Image 1 (cartoon, rainbow, N blue to C red):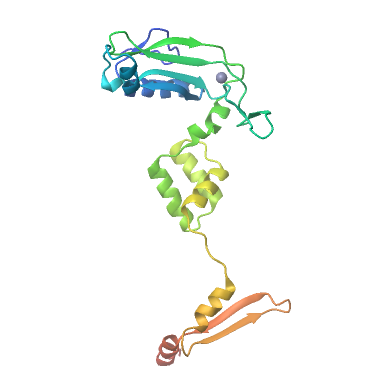
Image 2 (image 1 turned 135 degrees about the vertical axis):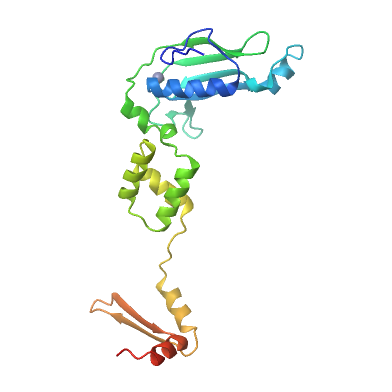
Length: 233
Ligand SMILES: [Zn+2]
């Protein structure tokens, strides 16, 4: 199928939701526009609404509105009744692509592309949008593994950016670590109790003039035996 990715057009048809989603994704990348699904109606809901019409399963939705991520989604805070913007990138952009099913229920088509963006479209801003920064699960697994090994976050960031071509922020890595990497505990009292609970072990803590811990000397009976039986010279 010949496809002009730069110019989605009214009336353009798609044989399945999968095809539509793929094309929309490519279109976003070429045009530096991040869309989100502002509203949709599933095929199941459409069938309940219009029992006489038929819809192919592979269309998945009978209606989808893709709106620019900078579009208005304003929330009213219940406590103050003030209008609040949930995210700083909301600029009330009116751009929207409306998708519907054809009358025969066999295809999806672009019913309308409406509105002009009221903001700049730059590659840099586009690459920084959370949706574009999302890493695939394989890359994320790799990041988690390296973070567990206490990899330097700045180096890991460079590595992920060069291997995926995506923008990865240090905050993204911080969030991945916070969700996936167990915290290293640093409870000295607990550590001392644990060491002291081992029978016949030797425990000595070395502190400096300011009572800051410098070193711990610790041997279990087993360690003592091994040291005793292996002459050092
Ligand atoms: Zn926009």
